[in-house]
Length: 133
View 1 (tube, rainbow, N blue to C red):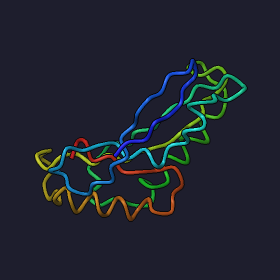
View 2 (view 1 turned 30 degrees about the vertical axis):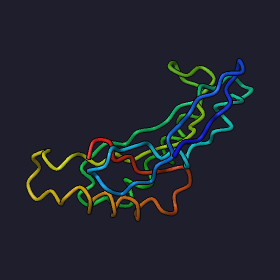
View 3 (view 1 turned 90 degrees about the horizontal axis):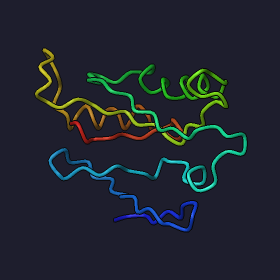
View 4 (view 1 turned 120 degrees about the vertical axis):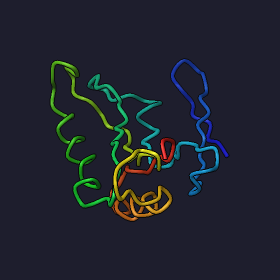
């Protein structure tokens, strides 16, 4: 499944909308968590739109893994050298590492993905990306 997104200049981008939970399927990025309106109508103050990607083993995911995107989102609102007008976070993803990562005691990816989904279930704008897993 996919979602057409109208962009500036009259062009249309097509984003995949799969919510597959299998790490063996061809993973697609679940864009349902993204603030698509910010991509089609950028913030008036000139802030850059960004997507956060939080990488880790998430073995297990904990409260700070789930809260990190909100903390970074708040920090990026302020003007900085990299983002003079600040940045508008349109979404965030936790991305668990693959099973062959080599960390002792690493739980299978499918279980870490399921735990990560539960960890961010009540965090608006945060999804799980299974690409690396």
